[in-house]
Structure formats: structure tokens, C-alpha cells
Image 1 (tube, rainbow, N blue to C red):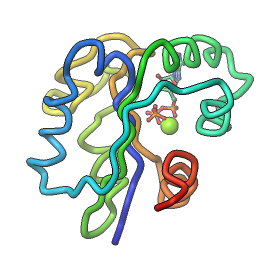
Image 2 (image 1 turned 45 degrees about the vertical axis):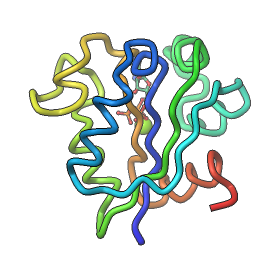
Image 3 (image 1 turned 90 degrees about the vertical axis):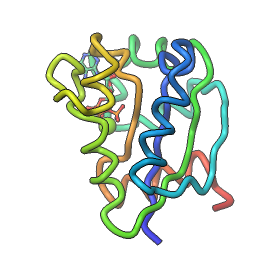
Image 4 (image 1 turned 120 degrees about the horizontal axis):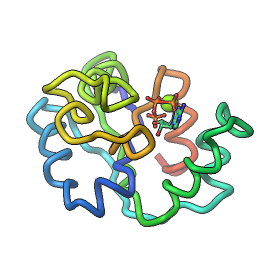
Length: 135
Ligand code: ATP
Ligand code: MG
């Protein structure tokens, strides 16, 4: 099994795009093996975004990511799942994201970029451990 962590960020939940985004992963024939709607606290966000703690945009990122619930899920595919998901997400800044990607089709603002996906196999293992320690 090859798994990655995906977060549908508060903007996706607020804009009622959960179905739209989950539908894309299902259409790609990925398996959703865990799913949980929850509001993140500062400690969880500091663990999840440990490489960004202290950066100039970190305060804004935490404010955004904790303003409402996120949909956390573990997505599984046959191989290279984190890369498959990142390709479907598009570039970090939705302005640069190609049409056909989640961010390219649905987003405009940099911070409010709809989705998170782990950026390596190591990140996937680490982040799944934060959100779904029993998996
Ligand atoms: P994510 O980790 O959320 O999947 P990413 O891996 O594409 O996104 P990162 O570099 O890990 O991008 O940045 C994490 C998040 O922090 C981005 O998704 C974005 O919301 C925000 N962010 C990153 N860089 C900036 C920046 N320069 N200005 C504002 N927000 C930023
Ligand atoms: Mg990242």
C-alpha cells in the first residue's frame, strides 16, 4: 500500500467544495482509507508545518488553517501516491496552477489554496502519524 495525507483546508469546507475535491480523487481511482472533519489547534499545526514555523507567513497560515474545520484524509493508490496527489493539486500559488488542477480550477489566493498533500514519502509517513496515529 502506498499512502499520503491530504487536508481539505477551511476554505474548501466553507465554500462547500468537499464533494467536488473528493470526487476528483475518487475519479482518479484512489482509495480513501481514513477521513475525519476536525478543527486544528496550534500544537497540531506546529507539528504538521514544522518546516514553516518562524517564517514570515506562518502566522497568517495558522490563522487560516485554524479558522474552521479541515477534512483530513489518508489516500491510497498503487504507487507514488503523494506525487499523483500533488500533480492533481497544482502549484502552491493558485495563480500559477494549471487549469485542470484543483488549485488551478478552484482557487485564486495564495494562502487559501484549498488542499494540502504530503510532499514526499517521508512526509506522508510523518504526517499520517500526526493525524491518524492508529493507522
Ligand atoms: P501544502 O503544504 O499546504 O500542501 P505546499 O506544499 O504546496 O502546500 P508549502 O511550501 O508547504 O506549500 O507551504 C505551505 C502553505 O503555506 C501553502 O500551501 C500556502 O498556503 C502557505 N504559503 C507558503 N508560502 C507562502 C507565502 N510565501 N506567502 C503566503 N502563504 C504561503
Ligand atoms: Mg507543503
